[in-house]
Length: 512
Image (cartoon, rainbow, N blue to C red):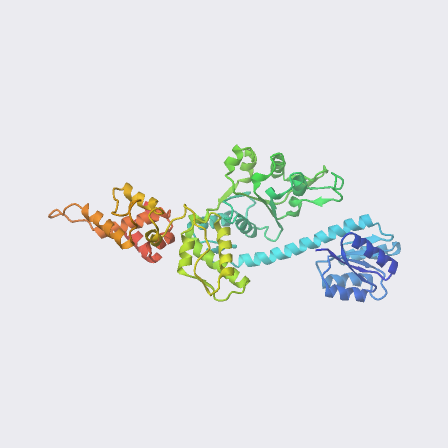
């Protein structure tokens, strides 16, 4: 969208000239011949810049600046005045004007001032949004299942929350590791908004998306004329993050020849804009993230080892969603509420089958994939209940026990083969045999167990067979689901509290 400018001048020639010049620079311009008209326009529209003459017929120039700032505190004002009013122009800057120019206007100088004023307003708006975000995020600190915008109650997530609590107030460099879709940026937000820099800018830079030939200029900034196309001074990302934090996402994708310069900034706490020999103070908190194994990146020559150790003062490793499946229900409910509100779908809920699908899926795309699957399910749902999820299963995704019994034998060969290896091959269940129902399979398993029991010895207590079977089945389910209790409960067709009771009764917690 074009930037909006308000020009106020009772001299028609000056008014037309300023309007023409601003439009030629891409501004959308509103022109006013009096101060009263200008203030009315300011109340009706939000402008990025206001240019006003001091000598207006109806309102004193100083009063004009003061009232304009009351209407729109974020909009900067540049005063245009004659030589005889230069002292008043200086006074106008004291009451809120950003700058002043003297007629006849040097438009090159004027547009430098306009550019700086517009950038200042945009930064003001960013800070205001961030302040609102801070209040929203801090309101979520009451529950450890929702911490600074991060959702998850798994033990691994609790450990991450504790790390953030311990290091957020420091300025220690943070390296966040995790697969794509695990929520690295959300963790970075939590670090920044828990820190003493929370009210300052948080600048996010995707290193893999920056043009290779402009990344140094984008990061450090440049001065006018430093290279072809540098038509004005530019504040880089590091300058924009002054006093706040900067996130370098996909740090392993940063050009290798730029990495020593970043390392020098971290060591010396100063940096130089491209084309300048004037040092700039580097006052920011560095947060980096990557979905690559950093040691593999170092071995491949994509990441300097000395930079890795500099940015990795504190390492936060986010587990993939498949390793914290107990968080799937709360994440699912969160996204259900978000998209139900977004698409105005009232009283929508998941069926048990939909939950089973989510809890028995591998989630290669992690939280992001879960989010998109739920959004799609809500958009496609025709009733208030989501009966099933549109999830593409792969060979690595586990089957529920009900699915095993309902699946042709060639599909469950891996399941049966595991049984065969232990010396048991139920009749009629081989690859060439007919599939068995769940009842038939359990009968064969029961027969196998009983046939292999030793005969009771008089005076010697016989072991409780059913207790042993229960213990063995629960342990096998926990191993298959890699310790995920919710997934194990679903696999066995149990409510989770009942499964917990079995685990405690058989002391299986330490065996998984």
